Length: 435
Image 1 (cartoon, one colour):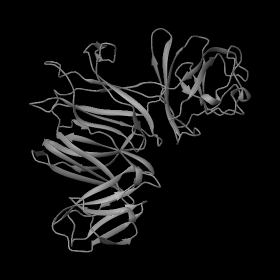
Image 2 (cartoon, rainbow, N blue to C red; image 1 turned 120 degrees about the vertical axis):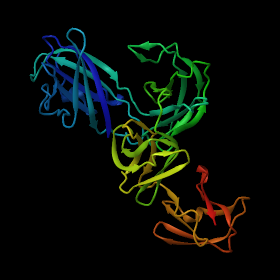
Image 3 (cartoon, rainbow, N blue to C red; image 1 turned 90 degrees about the vertical axis):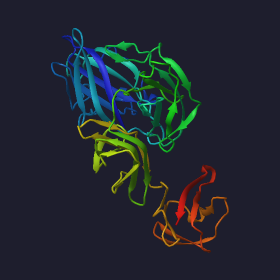
Image 4 (cartoon, helix red, strand yellow; image 1 turned 135 degrees about the horizontal axis):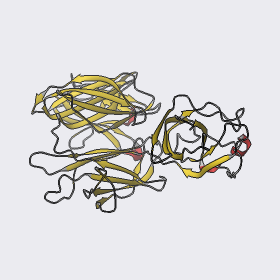
């Protein structure tokens, strides 16, 4: 399934009463003459993915029938949101949100969609086409770019955090560029343009739902009195039909209630464990834990009270006992006592049928036995080492996806490394404290 938002501008003159939108994959886009009559299903072809029918006479609304071929083409209408924004004269901007429909192959790669929109004077079975716009490509707003500028008051310097995530399970190459905003305002707002200063270009990097791009506390260049400039991110790639632009806003004149040092999520057996650490809290009230299936629309799962005021490290946790199948996207809404709030970065946890879970169950360990969770991976790939890299012999017992590792000989107190080898993917390691 794909979810799209579609916008277009029309001239609502006296002859423009009904507007229709058709969408295809590029390989199924048909050759149709749009200068005469509205096309029927035989002209639209078997590759037609979706049709929208809109009444533009007066207040815009969605129709459940396609008048040019009502028996064979059923437009999408349920669950959609439509909005009209009047422009100058008789022009209006029409926006339709939450358009969902299945696209073959969308689970393996980001789909590119092609379409056309046309209008007619009447809802008849053989309507004349009044005006049209053919062969447009939909802009894909996946991957999603989030991040922030860290003020590091009072001494500075400013740094930035950057997260780029995608819902695509297949890896694809992207490149991103970072610019300092030139400070020129358009209608009172910052805007991305030719005057912005490029300061970083990344190498070509793989991106997928399991391979996000993340940078934390990265320094960037700025001169005296330029520390209030925001950062623009421009993401491009051979498989993306358009560049994706995002702004890391500079809010360093705002005192945030919480300094968040870490926010992580890990897959358990039938749940997702979230943990986060703060290094400073000033009048903090609580944390709202939010989850999304698509990294855009979030719902609140729960709430954890904050310590309130603290200048030392504080640790928090929350367990999502009913995660979604597939990708789960999480963020924290950090709320101050006066109601002001800020959002954390978005993290992704894959809860697919074959997703690997590897987590310690208790650390420091008890009775010198290491308990851990292992799901969808062979326990023969587990190893235990001391900090010098020396392997330690052990035995394993199993109950479901929970394991107990018992060293053959008594372990001295100290730190050890529990390792899960994953072939070419390297190894996942956990530091274990034996008291």
